[in-house]
Length: 593
Image 1 (cartoon, one colour):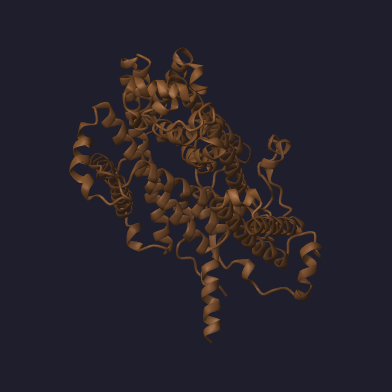
Image 2 (image 1 turned 180 degrees about the vertical axis):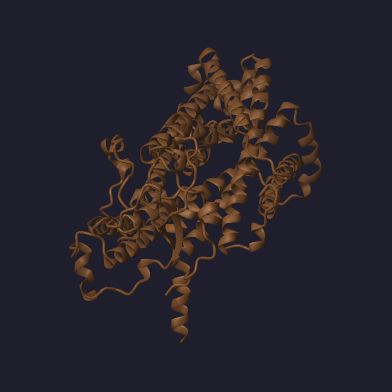
């Protein structure tokens, strides 16, 4: 009896939402072309990382090689963006990764993904507030924060900030109150703010060409000694490392890339606008890659400018660009840049507060959080409790934690979300007929609505389970079956486990592994062989034959077809209804059979 109840509980954890046709319609909205999607993506991605994070990474971690760190982070972001694009193509639903995972993988995965999103957004809001506070303090001479540090520093634990940042807390609470009153994100304000940001970035990059010195990429210990004698205080300088362009070796480049990934967070917001794109299967991938490229060019330009204007060990990490202009004798320009940075960071802080209440409200309406968090104002439809809870939590985080720690936490959270999306994509490629039936013809006007249903991976195994070992290498069917889907599901979990163990070994004992330690090197080689074997087993399994238009460029250019593929994607010129209009929370038969 208890085994049956445990099995039913497990089925509830993996039940998922499927898309079924419904006759509900919605008036079309103004389409977003690739240019508008790229503009939206750039506005969502460029943020505190370009103004605050650059100084710290260049001074302590990567030196001038920070430009390579940004390149590595950009490549990782492009690959993650393509996973999002394929996920959106397969799921045929435009929303956050939470609904993607709920529709495709199940309730447990949706819960894990949603909490990662919430924590990442909340920590991101706190980091932007802290960045604004740092920029503001540098502009007025750090008098407020010096007083706070002198008062509270003896009482603060070592794992928290040196002083509580009441400026960041007040700013977050103020903007949260504005949202509770019903404020909406302004397109005009966003365009003005993005314009200011681009002007500031262009000015910084042009200044680097004028005042930069290429010798700052070839610094030696002699230069470091000379700067020390000029300043008279060795503690005011950062570490020299080995000097040159890569002063902290390739470990510094990779460490810097992990932190620089924070600067690319936001490109995935483009996927949430897919319903407004006339041909999302072409425009979404192109927009993501273009956005990442533009942001990389901006980050490359400002980081190169900073390290050319100032020796990397003399960079001011809290206010790198205003201090850089002071260093080259352009003091007034530094104040203008500081004001522009404050204006843009204020807008980024406001915009970062919007998505968190939406995810909390969706989870509460689905029953994965307290339903009281879904409570809204009758007039403005503002999720009051979700907005207040996320705003207060963001304020507390901004109050107590250092900016660098928040960057680490946010990068970890988003990397985990992107890894989950990549895992989901891998599994969905080999699932049999989890979409609508391929033989079912759907009219262009038909919308898509999610339906809670148990995961097909948990159905009873097919006959002939004794041939499982043979089917690992020689599948019996050219199309996905329940058995092949279960094989891929298990191999994907095993692949994640093997890669996690291998990463931990390489992170903890890199020198021993590469120097030929008999135990660690043998374990690393065995893990690599097992990883290769598991990957080959997954590769041998039959994939879903449904076409993915964003993979075939010639297909995406075919404008004669109104649908991306039969029975799966609706007419691209008729966007699907929004989540709030089509998501039925009380669907009969939600319990698994």
